Image (cartoon, rainbow, N blue to C red):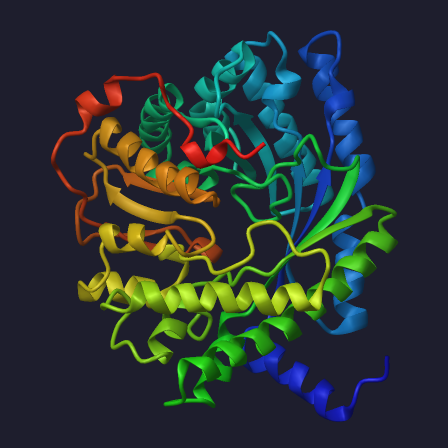
Length: 451
């Protein structure tokens, strides 16, 4: 395909001035064949396989950046949920696997490795219980390992025993790390996708190929700049503008994904066209919503604006690629979005409003900082609410929450890099203790019976 000089100039402008980038190239690797006779053998097999399959990942991505002139911000690896290869291992064994994953990340040069995960939406195996119990120690012992737990699906309902346990796990992880930083690498899901390239929730699902390349694109700045050109126009025009922009961004992701898969001798999986913000000014989802006419993100109308944005992004992306997957839509991670941070500080955005917004966006309550004194039961109840939104609406929802030790409402917590800085948000102080203590499983909704 021959590109016109106008299209080339347009793309260069989007990259240089509007923060357009490939947010991540993530290689998914199956570890199911790495189970050894003992934990040492398993760890050795894991190290050898990851380094063999992903040893050239970073250099290949750097070559693509140079050849195509498209920045690739992150190079990452996701692996089979570790609970599936842990067997009858102990908490210390699980931590040893996490340390092996960290060693792999250091060796191959990726910035994160995901898959220290368990899928417990319908119940626990012994290995699941062990892995979840090990999460605080594993995250404390590492800096690049990301963990996730799936506690609910539309078909299975919500495992409230796991929800209750994870409230305690999150508290422990926060209290045993600086500023609660470990919790930034822990996500609790409902309806987790198996092909998600975005951390901290990425893992390589059992339905995935042996090795696969998934690409996550981004471009909130590009969408905002496009909307600036249609100021005052109707929502029909707004939706069409977003669709056309998402189409262009997704085509770029498709190009990079195919090229990376070919050079790495791996299968091309999906392009995730989520609008993933960064703390940089001009790269904010909140500012897109405000460009539609809201004085501040969180004002009445925010949920409707986000619904339009999410839907238009998906429609534009689907037209650009037959391999759209992952989460795909708009992320609203508070600490990673300068517009969201400003809205919280201005008092226009609360956890309750964010929860309403998660009904129509890609994921859920993401990078929310709450007071360190927040009870584990309250954290569990927040997870349960988000899981219910996902299960009832047959969509992916998630919680990445950070109870910052020693911090209270109005304080700021600095995470650095893409994780940004988070204002501590007010949490409803009414107790959820008795609710969470019930345990058991919230049954699947009636519309799950579709066979």
